[in-house]
Figure 1 (cartoon, rainbow, N blue to C red):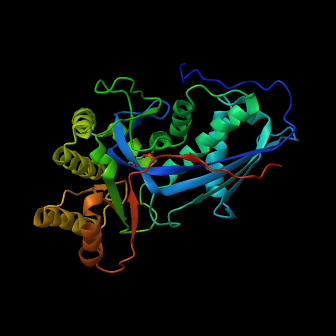
Figure 2 (figure 1 turned 90 degrees about the vertical axis):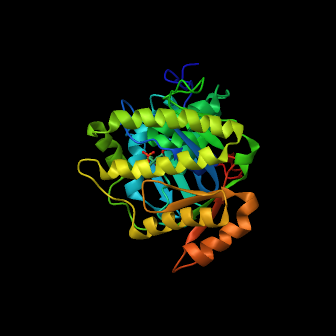
Figure 3 (figure 1 turned 45 degrees about the horizontal axis):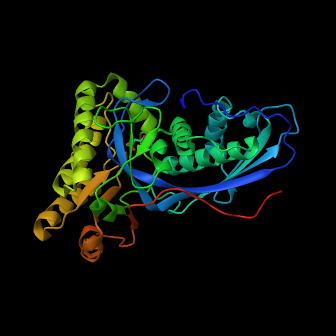
Length: 362
Ligand code: PMV
C-alpha cells in the first residue's frame, strides 16, 4: 500500500455514538538530527533516534457525532485545562487530516492529553504529542470503518510526521530511522521505520539534564526554515548521510566508540548550524557548555562509555549504559549538577507506544 495515497473509509451511515480511544506514546532523542525540511514536511536528510521509556504523552480522543453544519469543533484539554494555543495548531492539523480520515468530517472531537514528564521542563513534547494523536486517529479509523488499517504503524508514523517531523519516529520503540537513504532498504521520507540493533544498545539509558526550563528563543520550525538558505546546507546533508551509514553499522555490530563519536558530532553540528544560520542564534546556555565539557572529562577520567547529545535547546541528554547506572547517576548528582540536584529526568531506551485501556464510552 502506498501510504501517500492512503484514504480511510467513507462512512456509509451517520455516526450515532461517541467513541473514545487512548494511547500513550514516547518522546524520542535524535542521534542523527533532522534539521531542514522540504515539500510537505519531508526531511532534507535522514535522521535516527531512540524512543524514550519515561517521557510519554498520554492522549484520549473522544469522537462525538457532529450535530451542526459547521467545521469540526475541537475541545482540547491539556493536563486538565483548556489550552487554546496548542488547540489551534491541532485544529489546523485535523483539517488537513480529513483527506486521510473522512470520518473527521462527521465528528466533533474532545482531546484530553497530559505528559508524564514535568510540565514546562524544557523537554519538547511535540514528538510524543503528535505520535499519540496519530495513533488515536488510526484506531478511530479502525473503529469507524470496522476493518483493520493495513500497515497501522506505518500510517501512524506518516500522520504523526505531518504534525511534527520528529513525531513520525515516536510510533516505534527502540531505534527508528526516518528519511530515504541508500544505507537502509525500505527507508522512506514519508514515514519512519524501526531498526534492529545489537542487544548492547537496548541497555542504553538517557539522563536528561535540565539546564533551562524556559521557552526556546527560536522554535524548531524557525531553525528548519533557516536551513533553506544555509551556506553549509549541502555539506550538512552529505555529513548526515555518512553519519547515518556509520551509525547503522555501529548499532548493528555493537561498536560503542563509533556510536559515541557520531552522537556527539551530530549534537555539536546541530548547534553549529544554528550559530552559522542567517541570522544566527545560540540555544546553548553557558551551563550547557560547562556540563558537556565535564561529561567528556569524566568519560576519560573514569573510562565510562557515555556521551552527550542535545536537542534544539540547552538541555543535555547524557547517554550511558545500564551496567554503569549507579556510577553515572552518582556523578550526575555529585559532580555535574551544581545547584538543584533534582534537575534531571531518569529516562532510558523505551519499548514504544501502548494502547491505554479504559472503560469510558458514551
Ligand atoms: O520535529 P521538529 O520539527 O520539532 O524538529 C526536531 C528537530 C530536532 O529535535 C532538533 C532534531 C530531531 O531529529 O529530532
